[in-house]
Length: 495
Ligand code: FRU
Image 1 (spheres, rainbow, N blue to C red):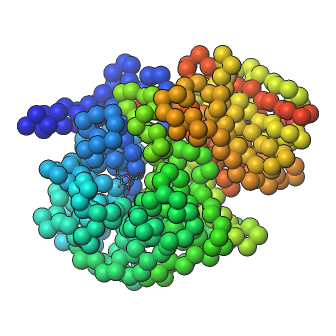
Image 2 (cartoon, rainbow, N blue to C red; image 1 turned 135 degrees about the vertical axis):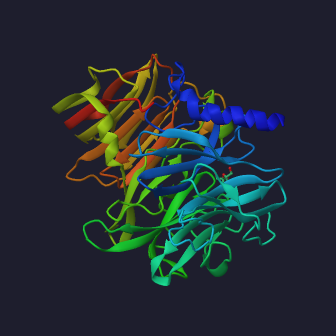
Image 3 (cartoon, rainbow, N blue to C red; image 1 turned 90 degrees about the horizontal axis):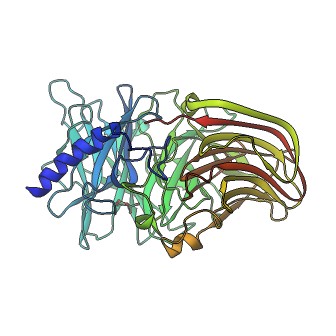
């Protein structure tokens, strides 16, 4: 009973507290990335588009600001940028937590859950019994995702395993059935299943182990994405999360089996920073809409200890996905959804400006977007944000190693967890275009998301630097760098 009352009050809280004065203004609070008003969150779940709204369900603890009591919380958006909190969607029951999964709109009522012409939304998630069992369950909603009923014959897929989780479901048109991708975490492979009614599942094939098997595999996502520059052509992208980073494979899916077409010995990642995990793509987007994914901005190595309150965890800007073939290898191209541009304000532009040493921008901001095209120096060069009191976050190009890197070694608070301070510098090889590097940087108090060369690589990191560290500078070691074009906007708060 006590728990029920708490839950009810938190439903109110998650839904309504955004109106109070200090919420969404706390130290470290992201202003244009989604985060719950209070309490712990991890993976995005059940991303689906329905009746003009983008639904975002997510792993949530209604009882505290650390992981536990996993429950699906819920928000919706009309533009993927501004979000409205809704009551808890699917709550933990007795000994079964509601782990990650996906959601579909069952337009043809294949599940039979629809009543009086009302189209059911069906969520497929992992029921987790601690140290005992993980199996796949379903629940349905007849009021556009607001309230949910668990299927009375759950689980719908139980192999009697302790680790078996994170179903991603989608409708596979050519074969007229639902497909589930679900993880064998410890064994490092994805299983595929099919179903005509979302209740009875038939095993199709397995994919893995392959690539990065350094951590448990979680949260598979299989999505069809367009090939850049080849209208009408598409490939299938399989993303997996392996504690605590992600990787992707590009190839074909024939309704039964996924075939990877990239070199088997090369690991490629949707994000080369430390804080992008468990990303999945939206289901059932309008036809002209680019596939769009959202990831959790955090890292299990220190997630429970990050110094934020009364919430913990946030989600990436929604990212559109395409692929492109370069040197016979498929690469993922990701861009923040265009709607982010509607938040731009107070532009500042600088053109053709040489920098040797450092150049401080005539603008202070902890909530900005920057487009920067520059010719790097022969050593390291780039931008420092959140500067002040000998603290800064560095985004740079290393001309010797030919890498783009992010570095939070000298950035604010790092001592809350020893893994955070050791996971401080991340890099990835990048090829300059006509000697130039192009960066699109989003900085939001405790989050930096860096899109490199029109989305050929992305690096995302959290940083915990105080509000007074708000300077921005361009730096150039080992000679001159040439800023060809720099444009900075303050970004409005979405709350
Ligand atoms: C990934 C994950 C999933 C699981 C969920 C539990 O971050 O570990 O595998 O379903 O989080 O909250």
